[in-house]
Figure 1 (tube, rainbow, N blue to C red):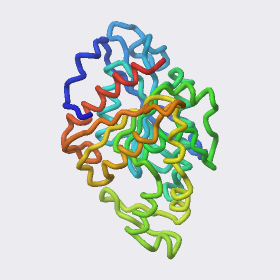
Figure 2 (cartoon, rainbow, N blue to C red):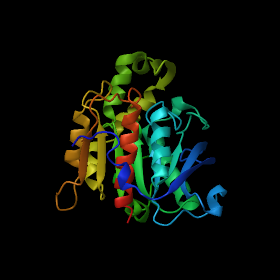
Figure 3 (tube, helix red, strand yellow):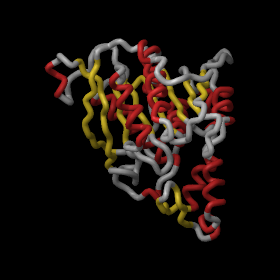
Figure 4 (cartoon, one colour):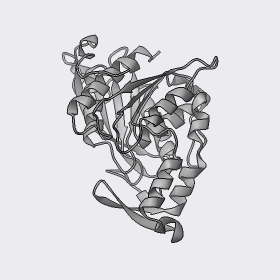
Amino acid sequence: MSGSPGMISDLACDPFKRRSYRVEFEGGAGFRLAGIVDRPVVAADDAATDDAAPLPSNVPVVVFSHCFTCGKDIKAIARISRRMSELGVAVLRFDMTGLGGSQGDFSHTNFSTNLADLTAAIRFATQSLGPVTGLIGHSFGGAASLGVAAGLPHAVGEQLTVAEREAIRAVVAIAAPSDTQHLASLMEVMNPAIVTDGVGDVVIGGRTWTIRQETLDDFRSHQLADQLDQIRCPVMVFHSPVDQTLGFDHALRIAGLVHDQDGLSQASVIALPGADHLLISHPSDATFVAETAAVFLRRYQS
């Protein structure tokens, strides 16, 4: 399926405005993480300026995970999160350990710490906003969202309980990989010293990042594809057929592996023709993703 921007707006008719505010909470690896809540408010409501006020009725709560070396404030994530809140979805977006406004050393993080941080974010959002019914993630954050929904084991921090996983009714993955091994291989090609010397620098997005052998080992230890059939909720996958960072085949692979207990598909793939990996070239791509995802997340919140 492919779509064009602007076709979903008329489906969201609730008169919401957006309220955004900063939060902090303890991540799964023990460091303080920085987040932003974008929540819908009813304009005429006196509680519209109260961060602790209950959400309007029938508003799903979702947690948004960012890509590798990115953060909660990159343009696509901010645009999508803000727009979804205007369409009646409460969103917690946050920085993983060692990135953005969060504490910790990025060079000592890995996919396991990502899963632990997302688990902590889900629990924080549940306590402060209400039960988390949806996950949304971009690129490597999409893999983390799929992994948590699937109950992928990880050695760092705590995992969601069965009840917490069952509360998740929908997952949105944007330009997400179907495995974590590919990133380990890419990092090794970018700088073989990571393996030969145990540590090395790579340049991503114009910035230099220190990557350790332990990080690549962790990436290679996870079998995400093997676990995707444990997801027990609908999944919506957005991907560009011309993504130069991650091939469209990853979206098709995810869709082929996500199914219910009867073997029936639970995944939808929506192509984003002409879009780049970070959804920067055409801002309308982020708007389309936000509007489509909001309808999807509201449809499956209960």
